Length: 461
Image (cartoon, one colour):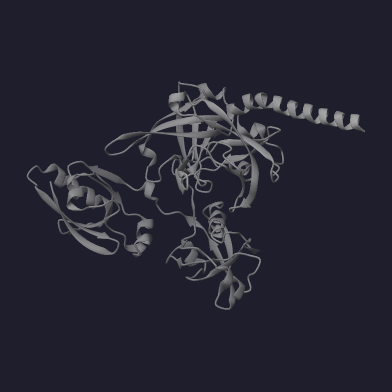
């Protein structure tokens, strides 16, 4: 019997050693699926470099970057000079920005043909039917160092502490397991999922006072312990944008979704599921035309009751994703509670109105301000009628410039210039260009709206 247990122990030890010996080989192949991406954002006053880490998704050299890789205030035209770096390389190769997908939030970039032979798509390491990792299962991933270290790759490993629907299935590890946007794998080398960005990593420093003094823990913002699981990633890798703005974009036109509180759900006999309150169905929108009304409570989509999520707010993301998976012209059926009645609303989704990123904008150096076209979302946020949009938005105000000194702030709504109403973006740019070009002009007067309050600003030129 003793010899049996000794043999069993030796076998287990040899198996563990064999698995450990496999890791270097698995690592050497899988590191070819990750890259570093550098680009520049050109603003009115600076050219700012940014670096993100990405995962290769196909043989065409297409790479996905996490949603936080690009500032939401930056327009595609401001993103310049993309370069793709292999792990451990000091030399970058040109890349092309393809746009952002609204559903996943991923930014898509494509490497030049000369680099593609050195890249391996992450799908190469995916199982035909991805398996959700078990509790306490060991998973590992890849991190990349900074540019001054030639993006050297390094190994991370942890154990699964929790798997939760947020609303996508996400594994939360005991500690960081990969760089944000980079892949994680199981011990067999199968693709487990992508590390999620900003999952608790916005706490850069934690300080604690204790009897012995003060301890400070620094959290590495370049690593993540949350992994969006493979079956939530793989079906969407083909959502490569058709243009840099990610169009076509489905549009509902209902805003201010709020989860129904558990006590209210119980009163409404909605135990075992979630529900969402529609704060507003915009006049003239697909939502309003399809029969949705303010304060409707959505309880089902296409005949299926909304799943139950915890925490409650996750259901809002779920409903948003249900809309974003569709295209303009698709029909989506909502079952809503309206008072004591259940009502069906059949909505034909429209095309998203012009985005802020698509809005025209012009910089006026003498004043130190960029004005931007007033778009649909501006009207919704400011609670004004969308069929009577006018004025322009101060998109950028140069610090210490004449406009800033006069009190103009970013996102102010400029409604009049020198007493003349600004009806269109073209009106504004024509007026401001004339002011800029006139050396005899010493000042101009702007009437602006800020949070519903009107202010008159005298800009000294």
